[in-house]
Length: 402
Image (cartoon, rainbow, N blue to C red; front, side, top):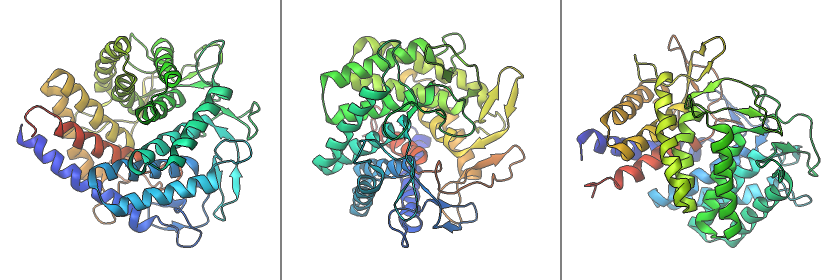
């Protein structure tokens, strides 16, 4: 195995520890319990910030998944802490959903059921069950899966509806964030439902769940993957009429490797073969979003006006590293590995925060820092810790790695 790959594994192993150390040291909420809702780009801790369910589910996943590599009992303990906090304060005991956010005093703030949040909670719970064998984690994950199937699944046109009120009634504002279109079916939520379902299937071999995973992958294949361009379509109404939007390079490359992984977990050979093809299609389409100068991945492109959003955020870099390494594993083509190695150099130079730890939000075209959260509602340890975890595993399993 080449020296650059071995060096990459060594550096990512150290970086995984660095990321977890930052979250262990700086994000524990000593005032209100749980984890701090926001730390800004100046490292100011906002103890009064609302706490997001996605942040907490991702903390749960990250420490659980990392423990499988680090075997550090402190990481397992923090995963347990995150698990106990989620079931005590985010799980809605009355209606069986997940609160979108809570106040620092642990009372519910935004009580809507955003299916994206339920999916991430399943993802975190199933990962925690894998390291703890705590039957409660499996029980909650299965219960949330059944809620999604009962209320979000569209038996007529297939796919899943985006959001509901606390008591599972229709809701007017379906959006995950202000930047999203207000549509009933979205790529982002479908991507993360199948991610959560596949992770649950690893620890709970239920035949209905397997069928749901395969159907989801078929829905994504039919509606969300643009077979001509290799990009993802993002927003649809309930009848699968598309609302054209931006090209999201980070989601394209995340889907490239993640959907293949979900297909492989399902065990359906037919769907696996098709998603091998899509993995390369989506990866090759992502080349156009890479800045040849520094190897960083741009955020988005508005195709109608061909306008590039000239920012490089932390999370698309994380997904690029996994997606292109996956393509390298599949093809043994050096061009994919070269992208990974150059991107990691970009991350080290511009995205890592050597002074304070963790990764900054990103940089502008002129390499100035984007002044957004260090940790917060959307700034979680999930993308970057997962990039380290995935590449450590993948390098270990390369031929001649042992």
